[in-house]
Every structure is written in C-alpha cells, then in structure tokens.
Amino acid sequence: MKIVVTGALGHIGSRLIRELPKHFDFLEVIIIDDLSTQRFASLFNLPKNVHYRMIEGKVQNIELDKIILGAKCLIHLAATTDASGTADKPEMVHKNNLESTRAVANACLKNNIPIIYPSTTSVYGSQSSLVDEECTELFPQSPYAECKISEENLLKDLFNIGLRGIICRFGTIYGTSPGMRFHTAVNKFCWQAVLGQPITVWETAFHQKRPYLDLKDAVNSFIWIIKNELYNGYIMNVATYNHTVNEVVDAIQKNILNIQIEYVQHKIMNQLSYEVSSTRFLNTGFSFTGKLEIGILDTISLLKNTISKF
Image (cartoon, rainbow, N blue to C red; front, top):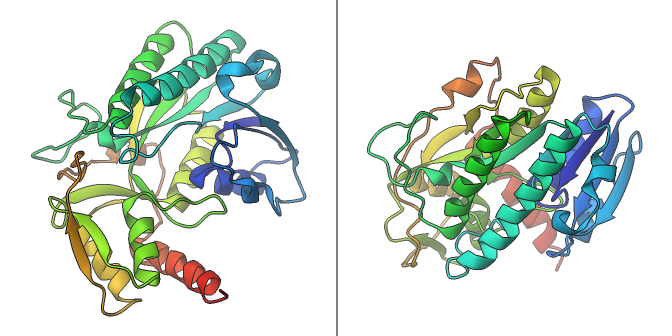
C-alpha cells in the first residue's frame, strides 16, 4: 500500500508518518516536502518496517502524476500555516497554499486518488453559538483562514466532477512531534513557561473559547478516514474539545508555578470566541481520546528534558 503525504516533515506530518506503519501492512510512504522550514530532524529515526521515499520540492513544481500513481490516498499537509506571522502577506499565503492545493487536487482527480485535506476551524471566526459544518456565515480573521475557504471551495467544485476526498476542519493543534512548531497557542505558552518568560496572550483572548485538537486525535482521524474510506466530499469538524485560554494556562500552571501573563495586541485578533461541534465526525464512529492536560504535560516534559541539558 502506498500513501502520499505532502508537507510530511511538519508538526502533524512528522508524527503521522511514524504512526501509519502501526496500522497498515506492506506500507510505502511517499514524503513530499520542500524543506523550507529545514525540519531535517523529522527524517531521523524513522520506523524500520516501512519503505519511505523522500521527494524534496514544492508540489506545484514536481511530477505529481508519476509520484501518486497507484496510491491508496494523498494527505495534503503542505501549507504556510503561521496565521499571525503572515498577517501582512495575504498574496504570499494565497499563492503558495491555494496553488499547491490546486496542483494536488487536480492530480488526484486525474489519477483517481482520494485526497484528505485538513482545513481549519479558524474559517468560522467569531460566532455567538455552537457551530457545525452547516454554518454558512464565516468570518475568517487572517489571510490563512481566508485562503482555507478558497481551497475548500476549489475542492468542493472538484468533488462535484468526480474527485474523491474529505475536508477536515481541524482545531488548533497541540502535542509533541519531531517537527513540532511553537507558533500556536498551547505549544507557544508551554515554551514561554518553561523558559520562565511571561505567557503572551492577546487582549481579547483570555476568557474566549476556541476549538483545540490533540495531535494524537489528528493522526488517528487520518487513519480512521483511510480505513473507512470516508471520501464522500463532506466537510467534517475535527476538534478534541473547546477550551478557553484560561483553561490552557491553568493546565500549564499545574506543571509550572508562578506563571506571569502579559497581555498583547495584534492586528489579527484571531482569538475571538467560538465553539464547534464535531458531531458529524463522531457519527462515523470515531472517538476522541486526547486530553489537554496530558498534551501539555508531554510538551512541558519534552522541553524541560531538552533545555536542562544546555
């Protein structure tokens, strides 16, 4: 069996490519990554019982038809994901993310390969009540989230003419992996706390609720989709739980005392309150097992064990 993963060396992908061999026999994993973030360590110590093939390059510039031929599915993780850091670069985000998704989706359609596409719950923006996938009033707060809507619309058009696949709106990821980053809330707060720095919270955010996704649940959602061939063109919210920033900070404080909070402003106030329902995905039989407290403990333990050596 062959599975193709674009952006495979990132936060999600670097853990996913290690978990796939535990669930599928005689596996070949095609890793596509342009190494723009230089996460070479994501390739270290890969499992031995699987054939990995690494292809360096942007998906827009490589011969996808040959690479994906005969694949069980393609998981499209390649993207610029730093919403805050790209607030003033909408053209760059759209050029990279939308065009990469267009290239991958067209190749999948041409070769009859199902696509699993992780979007983001950030497309909802501020909402006054619990929202599900039927919500049509979307208020994205960043070029990243705006582009995700464009990518979703592109995929929905292709679903209508024969592309098989699924769109998963992921909550904010937390949890450890070889290629993890620290630009999203939980991981960033853990990093700051371990280093003894104030936790920087956007002014509007402290008591606002947002959907979060344990990395273990994110990886398991891909495996569940593949095993059950959930390629019906649906949009599915995938979030372990809705938490306030205050709850995140409290969970960190159980492991690190005397945390200081520093309130900051940002041109993207992407911490406006909203909660999402993952009932549609749960109705497929999937179960979320991640826990915020455990994810934070794992992250803090990893950081403490590393930083204490320097």
